[in-house]
Image 1 (cartoon, rainbow, N blue to C red):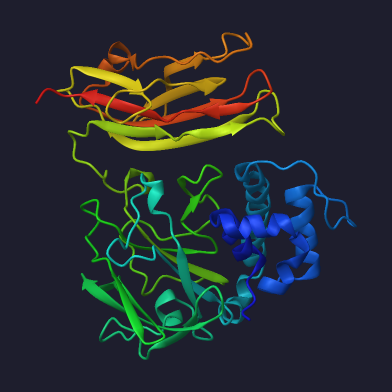
Image 2: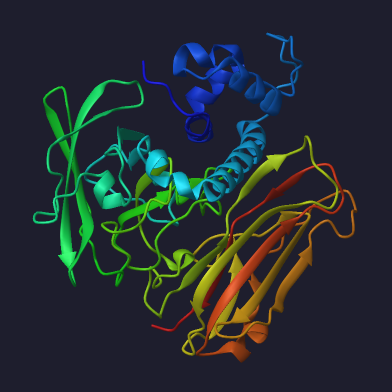
Length: 406
């Protein structure tokens, strides 16, 4: 059976409900299933369940999965920070470190829907394959055994699926301005082949494309099972080919099929007459372990075009401008004109009415007056959900909706 790294096993628990349920039922069994060491299991047990060093069962109060995953996320962030520091201090040993690098390719499980738009959490990744980098590699292209004349591997790659079962992997690339960009993966297992084809689109549209990152997935799910960028991962700048991109001692390379969107500094997924922008995702209610005053969610949306043709601008919980909004307890939205460095308050509201004991939702909120001064400009928006009164935390979605006459 293939041993997973602790970081990757945490990633499995973050995204797979069955695996997390199995771990919570018996956290001492991880080593049997995934080759996690005894000391690693002990850290996971105490981080997630707050167990003593001798507890084996009777795990006490059960919480929703999102609550457990908040604990896992904290540990994973520490791991990523430690890895980054360790690699920096050992830059002289890059060639040795990359010799043991593992490459993970995340797939949707459905070749007819090979990529996941950033804004669509229903298309979560369902499987992955992995393989070992070519020993002594210094670039991603070398690690993947790239043939510079064809854009494909020099030979079929032998890899595994999460269970350790053998798979064969090949890929194709397309050359733009002399550089190779990955186009498709073909996975063969038990005589059956599946091709995940995502033509590189020069970042000009919203089609998904293959995106690589080092020592952490570029796109991860938070405890609400929504997509977000991973602040601990390292990845290439806009339009950077994987061919010559240096590994810099990375232990892992992740490939994910994503739509670019403005979150990554690319062009928006929609043209300038976009009718709505997703500012913040819904947040399921959590009533345990809440710290009074804590900020429990933040998000940044870049390059929002304030269409001068819009007659109204609305905050709502649905992209069509309908639906009440609410947060337990406070939502705050700030904006910044692209090119400036000054944030300005656009909207702030205390749904608890100063800790009255109840949360009172608002119907869609018209903010036309507040946003009209930014007409025909691009904005970065920053949204924050914050507790005020203790007790529970939760929130609806938040959409900024432009009403544009047809």
